[in-house]
Image 1 (spheres, protein in one colour):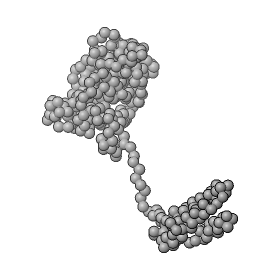
Image 2 (image 1 turned 180 degrees about the vertical axis):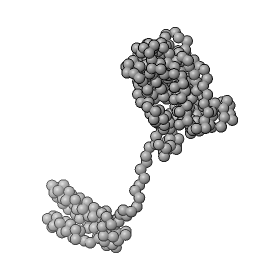
Image 3 (image 1 turned 45 degrees about the vertical axis):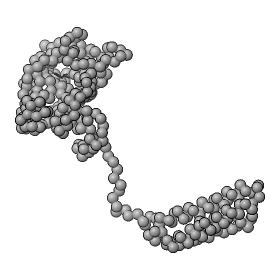
Image 4 (image 1 turned 90 degrees about the vertical axis):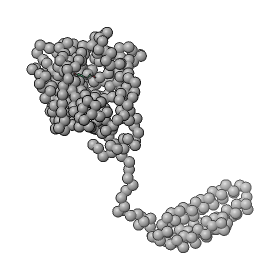
Length: 343
Ligand code: DAH
């Protein structure tokens, strides 16, 4: 028994001193220590001759030896195939690393960022408001009292816990919050997500994004509104794009208008995107209604202002030739990967 343990120690030393630098040496090593007739097996077979009391200690000792012999073999296995001395020498540091997958910016965010930076250049700052709103900020303050027929223009998701709470139907609610703060003049934009209870289809979704703008100061006129939005369109879509204003109705502005740009998908010849009219509506706008100013504590005799609200999805769809709005919220990486190098 002691004899075998001495042998184990002696073999350990021998293993330590065995050079393994070629595949032949490695194979010899494998056969001598780890092969089916190797020394590890041979020692293991001694187990049957060991007394019951000694079995545990003896087994542990042999196991340790087995692992010792195997570890050396594993360490050198990869190296010997090239006959090199050390594993480190086997690494080619000039090889490029494994590429790591990076994400991409979402097309909605790309378009929003572009819109925001255009307005930032002319002094607008960005403020965000809550997506869960109360009825007053979303409707009442914006000159839409209860039972006002224009409330039907936007089908609303109400929150069942409290019928006064809703998912904002437009970013115009942030106008109200900023005006209420009372710091004038105001020159701000409000990007964000909005919700409407609409049937989801290729053209409509129950949530989408808007950027709202608000400019309030003394002597602000409709001419200022037009120039601001002309500037935006040229920066966003290019100098060749034509613009037209159509009279419209929004309870929170008077007068109100909608702005169209000439369809740059078909060059105004007529296509599905412009519904064969040559024009695409991109925003609603107008002079802030005096009732709204008053509701928010602003002196409507002294101050005037303009506001607009535009959809981001439609612009993104035009810009990238997207024909189904649903792909913008499905997070299919085959779609998103196409925006990898866009900033
Ligand atoms: N809130 C309107 C909508 O979601 C868009 C809008 C129209 C915003 C006119 C405005 C505005 O600020 O002046 O349809």
